[in-house]
Amino acid sequence: MTASGSPFLLELHAVRHAYGECEVVRGLSFALRRGAIGCLLGASGCGKTTVLRCIAGFEPVQAGEIVLNDQVVSAPGRTVPPEKRRIGMVFQDYALFPHLTVLDNVGFGLHDRSRRERMRRAGECLDAVGLGAEGAKFPHELSGGQQQRVALARSLAPQPDLLLLDEPFSNLDVELRERLGQEVRDVIKRSNTTAVLVTHDQQEAFAIADEIGIMHEGAIQQWDSAYNLYHRPANRFVADFVGQGVFLPGYVRSAREVDIELGALRGEIPPMCEIGCDECGRGCQVEVLLRPDDIVHDDASALRAEVTHKAFRGAEILYTLRLASGRKVLALVPSHHNHALGEHIGIRLDVDHVVAFPPVP
Image 1 (tube, rainbow, N blue to C red):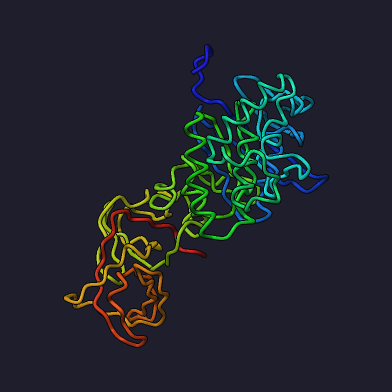
Image 2 (image 1 turned 90 degrees about the horizontal axis):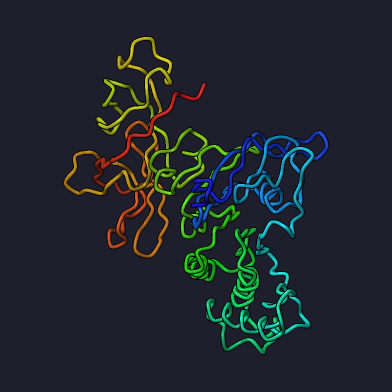
């Protein structure tokens, strides 16, 4: 915490950015604590990379302000140059210099230090990313995952206040992305660096970030932990975007109970004034989100559903099940329960969080 008392290294207040008449970022706000890893998660075209460019100082803002280390670095008519923001950046394409060794690539941004000091610091950073023995090699002699770690080491070498990562693993295969994502998180945490990641990949966001902002059409729909985004989505867009699930119609019996085709759910029901009923808790119609982990396979259950599709995932099988009404739900089942298409299996509800929204008009 600084002398000002703010726990936040980075704050965006109602930031707006447009390319001509095309508004790309619309009144976007969030704050990131010192030492935390935040993530902007969304589909292509939602504005997340533009936000990153505004934070870096590559783009001006038309409204709002960006505060870094208690100083306004972007506001209408004011943009602190990128080189004066103490920001490191890891790009999608690594952006390594092919004619420089790995060690020289990492030390490239340390112009204000002696050659000896540059090499010492570069060696420290290569050690931190597990490539201490590769300093004499050239980038083309390394794998894609190793090149990305070199890019991370280079960004950390000047000890930036903030690290920005723009889709850093999109050029790597799925298995490598998962492993490297955890390694990158560990390195960032060990260096106590504050970071913002931009990605369209949910698993990548969940594996790396402490807090995640779901973006849609230039605005953040919810800024929260991965757990809350999955189990307590703020709106239907977030509920649809995060994870998998289906909506079943339901009827509210009270402030803590709703009936659906599969039985009664008990828990906190969204405030009735948001659902739009005239008399709270009296048969209001809602749509209830059910995740695959809310449906449990149970041979002893009298409630049956027909297997219409199955996706093998190693330890589990994701089943698509048809209910008596014809509606479908998803269920994650241990893979030793290998049921055939068309087979009817027993299921029961196991719902910890009731997520309900007004019916779609």
